[in-house]
Structure formats: C-alpha cells, structure tokens
Amino acid sequence: MIFLQNQDNIKEFISSFPRHVAIIMDGNGRWAKIRGKLRIFGHQAGIKAARRAINFAIKRHFDALTLYAFSSENWRRSDQEVSSLMQLFIHVLDNEMKKLHKYNVRLRIIGDIKRFEMQLQNSIRRSERLTCNNNGLMLTIAANYGGRWDIIQGVKQLAILIRQGVLHPDQIDENALCKYICMHELAPVDLVIRTGGEHRISNFLLWQIAYAELFFTDVLWPDFNDTVFENALNSFAKRERRFGG
Ligand code: FPP
Image (cartoon, rainbow, N blue to C red):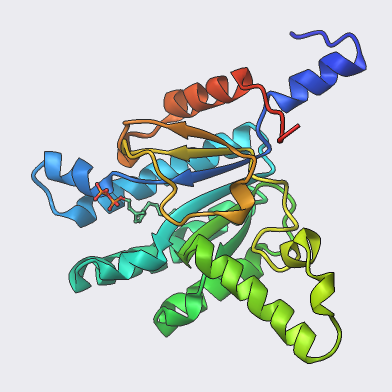
C-alpha cells in the first residue's frame, strides 16, 4: 500500500503513469521468418499480442490506447499480404467486438477508411456503433493512417471554414488546427512504444506526440507481453517531463 501525504506527492504519483499510450507494433514479419513461416502467421500472432496489450491497458486503467495497425505506406506490400491483412482485420472486428464491449471499451478507427473494401468499412462502422457509449478504455486503431495525412485533413477542414467565411486566416493558430486533428478530444499521448528494433516514428502520430516520451524495444511485436509493457512504464516513470518548460 502506498501512502500519499500531500498534494505534491499525489501529483507526482499520478504523473508517473501514462494516461494515453500509443504503440507502433513492428516485427510480425521477422517473427514469422525466424520460424520459417509466411508473414501472415506473424500477423496472426500479432493479434494475440494486441489482445494482451489491450487487457494490460484495461487492468491498468489507462484512459486511452492507440495501436498502429496499417499505415498509408503499407499498401506497398504484396497484394497477397494486404488482402490477408484485410481478412484478418474483418475477422478480428467481427469476433472480438462483443468481448471488448463487455469490458466497456470504446473503439474508434482513425485513418482514411474509404480505401478499404466495403465489408471492412461495414465491420468498422458496426464496431464503432456498438461501443460508442462505453466509457472505459478508449481504444483507437490507426488504419490506413499517416501522421501527415492527419494534418492535411485538418488543414482542409480549416480551408473549408475560410471559404465559407466563418474563419479568417489570421485566426489560424495551434488551437484552431488542433480541433481537427484526430484524437484531439482525448488525453494527450504520454508514451509511444515501438517494438521491432527500429528507432523511428514512420509517419505515425506526428502532431499528437509533440511532448510524448518514446520507448523503443528490440522485442518483436508477437513477443510483446506484460513484462515488456511494464518495462516501458518503469522507464516512463523515471523520465522528467518538462513540456518545453
Ligand atoms: C507489423 O509488423 C505489422 C503490422 C503493423 C500490420 C498488422 C498488425 C497486426 C496484425 C497486429 C494487431 C492488429 C490489430 C488490428 C489490433 P511488420 O509486418 O511490419 O513486420 P516486419 O517489420 O518484421 O516486416
């Protein structure tokens, strides 16, 4: 049991936990290759790791968990891999939604989903509708998402307001644009975790991670478990966050 004696202690205790964690799930393909299997085998194992991470986030009472499932650049993969991934996403949404709903999770997809086949778009809409009134973990899946796309779609919305005469260019500032960037209404991203050994952001959230802490691990995504998540949280707790101050 931890005793918190004054306001400062409470603040320090609370700020040592991230409220919003975002994850770049990398390494499924390599995980499969090491085992002499097709890449899709790694993605299937990646789904299990995502399930573990979501359970962890629920247990730890995070406000929000954001997972990078498919980047705007992932269309460059072979037709076979893209199509297997789409089938896998439909399967996951149709089969896991009821369970997530039971756990009071609210699901939302960010990204340009219009490019997905109709069956997947329908599964996405159904899942979002089913869970829209839940107030537990906010689970965001970034699909056909890119950080630059996000900023551009926000700028386009401001341009429409200017054309309508509702906004003057002089009124464009951080606050004005922020309202149109995905996830602006959620707690800011505190921590970004990337598995798979690369130390880059790969056009994931750009605007949203301005002050986030970054944690990189060599662990391949299918091997990601509570211990690795715990290590990331311990590392986060040791960081001194100054937010530019
Ligand atoms: C990362 O490994 C793979 C992806 C980002 C694609 C799909 C992700 C999953 C299936 C995990 C969970 C999904 C959901 C919907 C929660 P990679 O293929 O880039 O691996 P590599 O770098 O070893 O090639």
